[in-house]
Length: 72
Image (cartoon, rainbow, N blue to C red; front, side):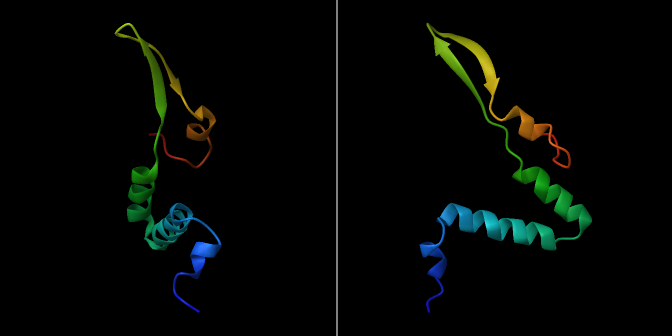
């Protein structure tokens, strides 16, 4: 059995997500909170037409308001 058997189960991005979560959970409280804040991302998009930007739309706004998640 090789060390890369995870490739048959899930993608590299999922593997990286799982390992990052495990590392963050192993940290003590102050470092864990700081690491979780760095891991939080907010995605917005804005449609531009004729050189002018339209309204910004926040994707997954309910994720930022979820309990236990730090604000971005």
